[in-house]
Image (cartoon, rainbow, N blue to C red; front, side, top):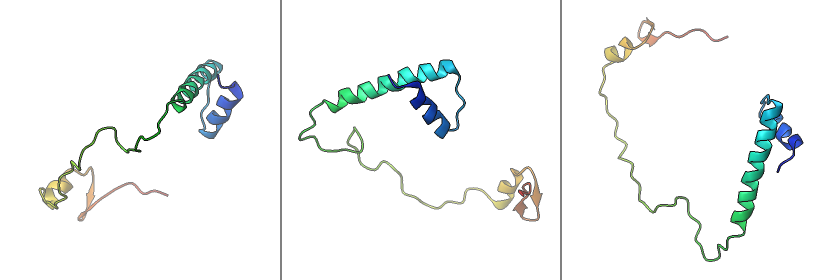
Length: 93
């Protein structure tokens, strides 16, 4: 099991405020994950080719083709507010 101080450190880095119960819960969960990783490290992977995906497939993406299905008027009709030919948005200071 991972120590509570390690969970607190990770929570502080992630800017999370955890309750004491959550710290105990995550300590056990993270410990279980690390135990599983140790178990996986014991597997002999000699001769196993590295892969980036478990299923062999080719590119399933369609060709990227520019299409203009909507007119400017149709697009501007979706805007909550328009000024001239532009979307009007709140000013960010």
